[in-house]
Image (cartoon, rainbow, N blue to C red; front, top):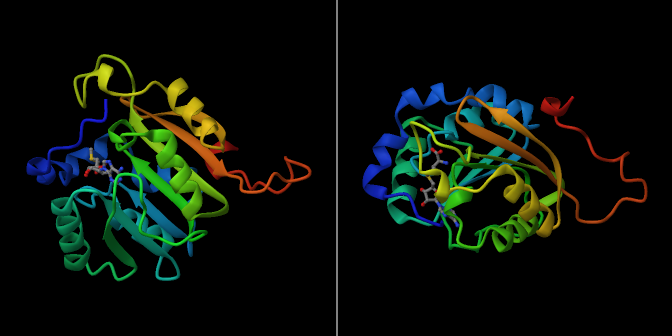
Length: 209
Ligand code: SAM
């Protein structure tokens, strides 16, 4: 586990054929992403999902892409600049240290990065710190099964393990869904203060209805 993506292969991450894995516009909307939101894209890599996140939040919103690998940050920054994504900022982060203040973002996207985290529970606690109360967290990763794409099953977590780690970190799991043929999605909500009546203040993302 925790095998980092080889930055020599960054260009492969920018292959439009990856759109066959899932439709980012539909999936991010289902996860609750809306116009005007501030988004954190964890492990942005080549910035493949940045144009979609940027479009969905519009100029009223903001997207922070972070990565621990300087080559990825450089690649994603160039991509954002070349596409004139003026609401996108790409930042170099540390393994378990996100370079943002507390209570900054409304939505966290974690696509194909969860299985690379060295300490997922501590990382999720750090995610919680930078999230506003009731922010949404959407995790997409490879299914833990034999596949003809992606890392081998022994290098990824099962949906169960991801759900348990989300709860251990103090996030509330909405549900697990299938995302295309190869991936699963985990919906979670950041609850900073336990509401008196738990069911009332949480706005359910459209994909959960
Ligand atoms: N999300 C992108 C995509 O799907 O196109 C990139 C996926 S790539 C497989 C995973 C990326 O996550 C790599 O660029 C890696 O450097 C980054 N990463 C791994 N651990 C990280 C961490 N703790 N914080 C931020 N980025 C991380």
